[in-house]
Image 1 (tube, helix red, strand yellow):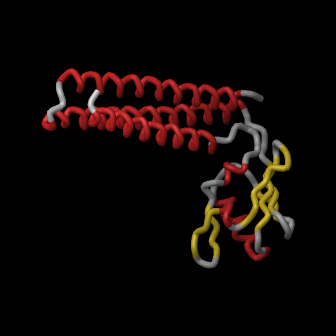
Image 2 (cartoon, rainbow, N blue to C red):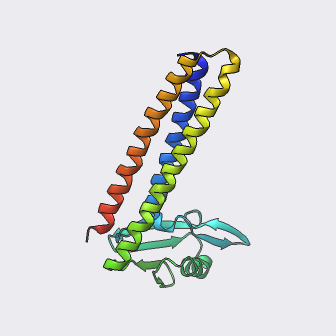
Length: 187
């Protein structure tokens, strides 16, 4: 296999690794009934006029499986943090005791679990689409190498390698999705 083809395969593998990491991160944000600091990753607080991620204005902990505690570094931010959590529409009610914000994560109903499984499957499908798009781009780049003197056989070999990578990464997405689905459905 020529160096040009090897480079395309390596680039595609790196892009697929990033797609898997992104998919895994999105699946982590879907709560499975257990309290997790990552549930608050997308929340931004108004910090002196600029939107700042919650984890940059305070400490987020989970003392037990059903509670998240947010301890701001400045007491003046308690109200802004509480407001940001309410506006995030996570289905939880923050309780401000003047020092920390405590969030009790309610157990999931069967219906809510099914909704979360659908959401997880949608995220997994997005991950698969991203991987297929990477395959398409890599194959197009390999075909363009013909003008640089790459033979048909080398192009076919390169496309075969890209397909093997695609199959392996789609299997990884399926495994992530199945693990998340099992996690969500476990009471």
